[in-house]
Length: 299
Image (cartoon, rainbow, N blue to C red; front, side):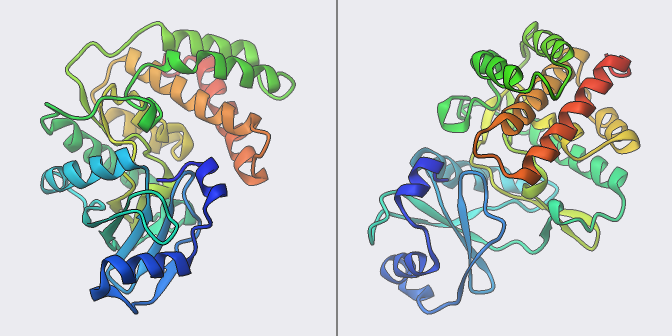
């Protein structure tokens, strides 16, 4: 994955990807290349021919995915993006990158989910299977994966700044209570595998159903609460309840998950360079998180 600062420094285009492929993997030279839209928050993905995809990535994440994803894939109920080749810096591009087998399907952000409650149960089943895989020796949470699987406290100053900026738009008193409740506990059980970015854009849909999970750049072992944010980002009502019931976590874990949802939505809504659609979506999530907290329906 490539951070925003890096994306501004290097223009990642079809032509650049074509040069990298031609130089390092000449057997795929000449295959059509097309940018995948929308792009990720911190990565750029290109379709290579009919069967491959190429992603520019952080060095640490490339190494992690190359090593761990082939080990995880056989134990999961859905296909994941397993790398088939690792690219090196070149042609003016200074970072490592990966080539993956292409997975058919459309991002859940594009709609097309036939039954959201069934989708929620399928995703919960995928996460439960991920949690059953032995996490011994897995990569810990840290700066390279934005602390997903780690403690929320690292973002305390950030969330307080964001909430201050949103004071006239959300119930900041309730948000502060939600945040305090999230910080009041930590994961004390055996560390579990964490995808780190279970978002609609990383969940593929085919024929109306969940068919694959992609983008494991934030993979780590630790607290699974960060992977539960989708309960507010995509689900509601029956689908949220089905997702919650299918995963055997205690109330403290759900409180930390609510904190992760609050953090992500707040910093997005308060961001200076925010996309209007993303800001509106984040404000909706914030309102939902606060309303649920106020009702005490899950507390």
